[in-house]
Length: 185
Ligand code: 5GP
Image (tube, rainbow, N blue to C red; front, side):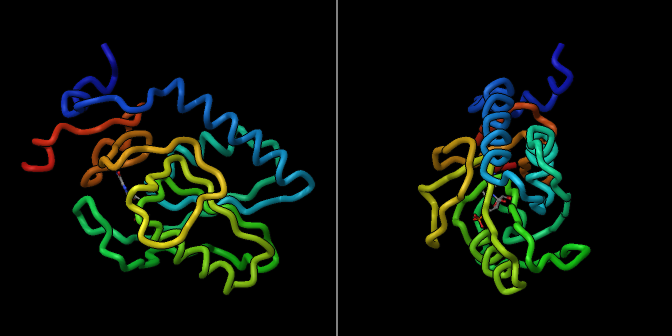
């Protein structure tokens, strides 16, 4: 029996399976390795949603990367953005002059990453790019294009592989759509 069988009962549909995710993450790691040859980028994980993607992606990159973690929040407990971005946990050291890659789970309205990109530019980084697992272009509210992404998803709320609903479902190995009754509980 699947280890996560109990929480899979809340799933309506598997959108992207773990094998497809692994392949896409591997390809993205190779692409970043090629693009940043001779460089040592600072990889910034935007917690908590990007955590699973982040650790998998870093292990597919053949460069002397450094790991940094940040918590930024634009959401309350619902399924759409509040438009305000709060930095709950900032980086531990100065990244001026460095090449920064922001690693995110999903770009939805684009508000979070637009804010973070501007913040890093103001901090005097040499470059800042965005690598996201998922891109949901249908809901974009600002002009933001991810430099790297693995999959485009439709306008639906997805969970799994790091993404949550009310802090649950992050440990599902696949990217899934929840049953509507879960939101109406
Ligand atoms: P944005 O600022 O681009 O609207 O939102 C980015 C953040 O919203 C993501 O990092 C993620 O935490 C959350 N988010 C947006 N769409 C989804 C979704 O479909 N599922 C989940 N679990 N979180 C989402």
